[in-house]
Length: 126
Image (tube, rainbow, N blue to C red; front, side):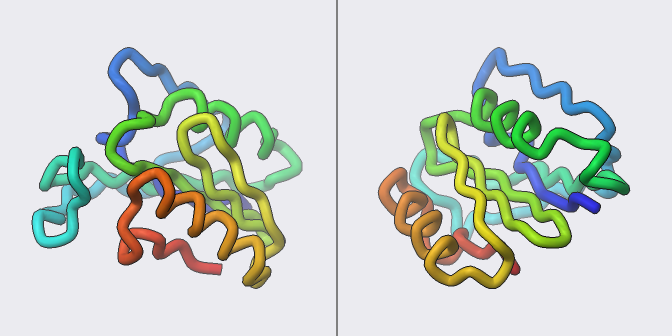
């Protein structure tokens, strides 16, 4: 199973994200005014998604599709996980590492900080 999260507001203007075989689990609007980074809106649209079987889904294609659609402005990322792997996607950059791999997580977090993601937003779970 693949489960993940995308902030709708993180998509760059004009981007079209058309993933195959993903199902939306939940859409939530959150007031994040206390923790929004510079350039981020104070209210986010959070889209939780899933697919039943990662064998039926192109994990690489999903990651690359997100990387092509995310805005490079404002410190955005999306993330998802399979049973074995965590995937963290920034505009034009993808990190894939085994779940529980602290070195892989640290590398993705360091990159996130370098593009303006505040520490408290680097909260993906293994």
